[in-house]
Length: 76
Image: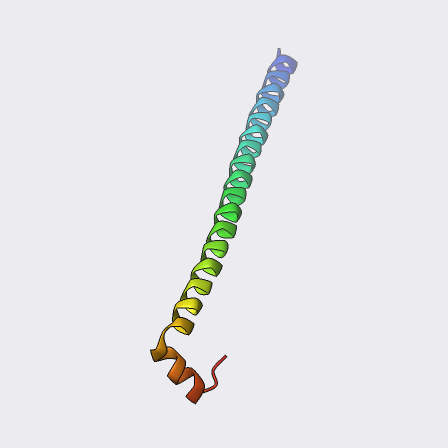
C-alpha cells in the first residue's frame, strides 16, 4: 500500500512537471511570435522613416528658404 502511494505521488509530480514544461513551451512560442512581429514592425517603420527623411530632404532642397541657409552654413 505504501509503495502504491509513493508511485502515485511520483506519477502526480511527473504529470505536474510535464504540464509545467508544456506551459513554458507555449509561453516561449508566444514570445517568439511576438518578437517576430515586433521585428517586422520595426523594419516597416525604418523603411517609412527613410521615405519620410528623403521626402523632407527633397522639400528642403526645393525650398528657397532652406537653400539660402544651406549655402551660408555648409551643413550636409
